[in-house]
Image 1: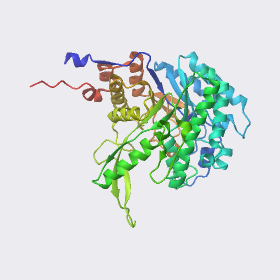
Image 2: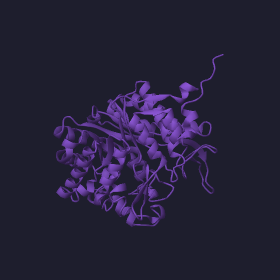
Image 3: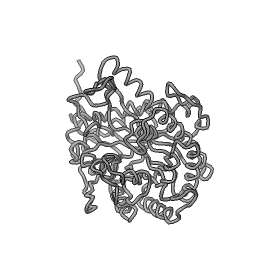
Image 4: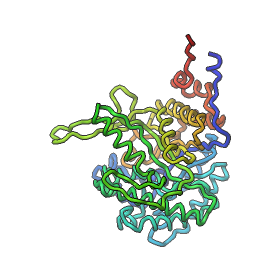
Amino acid sequence: MRDRLQAELHFPPGFLWGTATAAHQVEGGNRNNWSAWEALGGGRIFGDHVSGRACEWWDGRAEEDFARAASLHNNALRLSVEWSRIEPEPGRWDTAALERYRAMLDDLHARGLEPMVTLHHFTNPLWLEERGAWLDEETPRLFARFAAKVAEALGERVTLWCTINEPMVYAAQSYLIGHWPPAHRSLDETFRVAAQLVRGHAAAYRAIKAVRPAAQIGFAKHQMTVAPGTPLIGHLGAGLIHYLFNEAIFGPFNGRRLNFLVRSVSIPEARGTLDWIGLQYYAAQHIYLSRSPGARLPRLEMRAPEGRPRGPRDWGELAPEQILPRLKHLYRLVRQPIYVTEAGVPDPDDSLRPAYLARTLRAVWQACMHNYPVRGFFFWSLVDNFEWAEGYDPRYRFGLYGVDFQTQERTERRSARLYRAVCAANALTAAIVREHAPEAFDVIFPTPQPVE
């Protein structure tokens, strides 16, 4: 018992501890494809919300939140730059926007926070959206031009670059499921966009390296745990979704084709364009065969099994330990260093988040102890923010700090105090868990079983 109460799980020296954010979700006042989509109303966003002021980062509150990140003993922060601000019209660069980002990066460095800068986090300039966005053949070249401009202007302040956030999520939500702009539903377009995003990453990688040879460049990939909920069809469906969502996009990076079963394409320029890969993990999905009333054919459905801990609506099963097999699987796919670029849980009253975070970190520590090259962890998110199609739905609050979007007041949550203690110690200890997430203690530090 004494050993269990004094246990300490130490992370490697130099491990990066941070939080993740995205420009459109926190800045306020953006004019891009998402702000145009929000303005259409009609139930496209929960409650017909618009991002509006968001967290007012652009008007000066970013630095206030950077101070909060520093108070958490973080040594890094992931943020994105908004393409529509920097290039509001084709080939016209907004020097004031670049200067604002430069000031933000300088403030991060002054607080001892290493920036990881994301170039594309779901949003496109309006002029790009009007010409077809990532369906347009020229977009990878235009994205590389944008990446080069940002690297020239900001690169001396940035080592870690994330070209694209969750390419398969963007492709599926915007072109297959149709929940996000432009709300298309085409398997062919989903494949074409996925291929274009791979080309865009490769082109941006080389454009940044040409300007900043020492840059370390990767992209952030959402990986799902997909399990069968029903026999046979559930197994087949889970295997298919796992391949298409988790694996297919990595083919070109390993010298193979991007293969969507019925379509494939060679993208040789992608090979050798990863210095690291980002893992984003949230929940486990179980695949069921279901039939809606009046439907002619059954369909595959993803949801959490009854009786399992779950997030709001169709969020999935809360299974934080599943980040460990996702880390191992991702490393086998790319054989490059890994950053956990996002992990978190929607939890407005902070009743689930402390235990979820502690259990997630124990699994990340296990990966480190198994000698997987995990270099850092960025929790989603520093503050509550605008959650895309969920808008400001109060069920979808991810922040270590709560935000009152009327007053912009921030409130520190219990999970922030847990994260502060872990980051300060570079370790998850029994004392920290007992104080800040006692409900997770017996899971993380179980009583040793006697040997018979």
